[in-house]
Length: 247
Image (cartoon, rainbow, N blue to C red; front, side, top):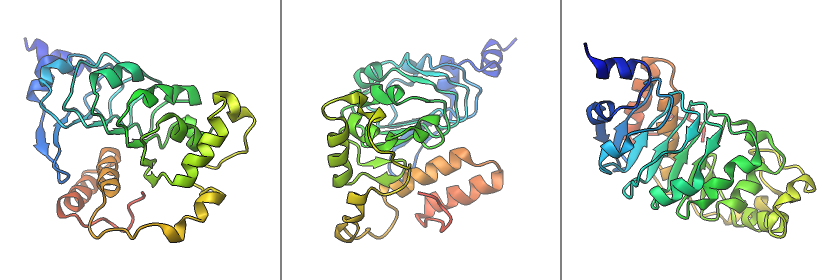
């Protein structure tokens, strides 16, 4: 009887599953471990990866908590889209993965502003996606996350502007509980101060930006058909960003 196969069928992240999982370099130059869509219910045994990967993809599983992560000093990117995550142990994440830069938590269950506090423990976190989480509908969501995650450059595939940092500091600098008293901020809508920055922004360089590359990877993780996966993977390989890609 194949006990390892049986464990995998039940959603266990065993050492054998990790050892036998696909891995490859992506167009961004990251060596990635693919653990997508295996009905994994909890993070475990990642030490079996031997800290050999720049990125680990745990999208489309059944993970509820981000915890139990061993020291992974090489890890730069963590894909966790389409799970059931309601809690992130940010202090453990920051300690175990000190060079973590990109975290994709699209379509999960984070519901309150306090649920993102732990992510602020990651000192090098520059890209974060929380699209599709209930927390994004909370008052002052974007400003709160920017205030907590000091190094962020991109939140939900939108650049963090200097004016947003200033507004976040003014809103929450003296009191993190100020969210209840501050004005409503609609997710995705530019702040009044941010609109003044539009003409001052640098020109977008030719070719896919890091944000576009990450958006493509998230779109692949969320694709529902093999045809869509193939189309997006071709775009990722060629570097030609589809016009319908939402960033």
